[in-house]
Amino acid sequence: MTEIKLHNTLKRRKEVFEPIDPENVRMYVCGPTVYDRAHIGNARPVVVFDVLYRLLREVYGADHVTYVRNFTDVDDKINARAAESGRAIGDITAETTQWYLDDMGALGAMEPNHMPRATQYIGEMITMIEKLIADGFAYAHDGHVLFRVRKYDDYGKLSGRSVDDMIAGARVEVASYKEDPMDFVLWKPSDEKIPGWDSPWGRGRPGWHIECSAMSYELLGAHFDIHGGGNDLMFPHHENEIAQSCCANGGQHMANYWLHNEMLQVEGKKMSKSLGNFFTVRDLLDGHDGHPGVPGEVIRFVFLSTHYGKPMDWTAKKAAEAKATLRKWRTLTAGVEPAATVPAQVLDCVADDLNTAGAIAALHGFASAGEAAALLAGAQMLGLLTDELADWAQAGDVDLGALADRLAALRANAMETKDFAPVDALKSALVDAGVEVRMSKAGVELSPAAGFDESKLAGLLD
Image 1 (cartoon, rainbow, N blue to C red):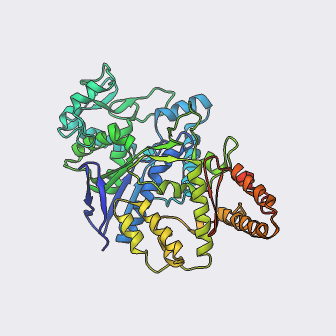
Image 2: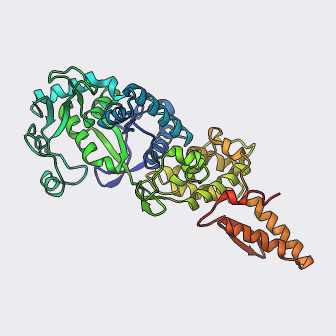
């Protein structure tokens, strides 16, 4: 059996993955709060953990892996969106949930085995909170219930911080209903304008952290294999999940392996609305601000070209290069059946802490060698070159390979006629469109460069 190694945030090292039960490998990944479209940063963990899901299914068998990713459909951001729009909360969450599924599906992400909604598990959250109170780990005050952070000795182990350092280095809310500034909310009161449920502490709603603890417990048990998410969730969300889950369930562990992906940048800068480089997955798919749409398969390829543990920089140049590569690969594998097994060069890379960049390098090697069946099997292991993502490649976009052939033919003719004007004109048009042109005795090679604009290539093959 293929040996899988994963970087465990909790242990701060790469470890051999040993499931609790190889017949029932279990993974939980924190999902979205459904009040708006997902931005491209939200999509990175979806693609990362989709690859891990595919790997686990490949190694242990599809019937022996359970993947859970939740939807947070009760949250103050949702309440605020309902108040400002005048729309019903249920309508907003239903719409945005479907948007999320559609957008992530466009990136080739498989749907998890379970996608629980927080509002479906309110009773289970209340039960967990009652046990925490009964065992002295939580307390009720003024309609709130809070977790006593200092009662859990291992608090801070995941993020590597002490409680005192957290207080000294951060702005911590000091509220009248808290015994300690670090205590966090498990339950809070709701007025008549916002959603609420009856509880022993009055009408209210759950805090954010208790949602994932209750849903993971109900669907995966008190102790499961993998918990994942973006590194922005490490503290306080995942730290708080561990504390309340271990205390409620009487265990030393919640998940054995914790995986966190790094954040995403755009053209070398942190994504933000103030910089004008903030856009949603749907913006990218459909086109925005005068930029043409980017196929979901291309987005996926760009994401997988950087290791999940490193910051990823989204650039138009990378997208253009990925598009050209995928078009070549789809041409090479047209009408070909994939190899019966995933090539070891690809599977071993993915099994080595999701080294998708290494796997893509192996795919380039298969393409160069003309090994189409191996290329197809390896690519599909990564969720690439699938039938579901093929539509864009049949849409008649400009093919840089065809333009390279065109330029080579014009140059060959010019060598005889001594009229290089057509060569210079086409080369100038390509450079103006942001294409890097390399001409040598071996031939003509074109590749996207900075400022690549595919729309400017229209008509150059006519």
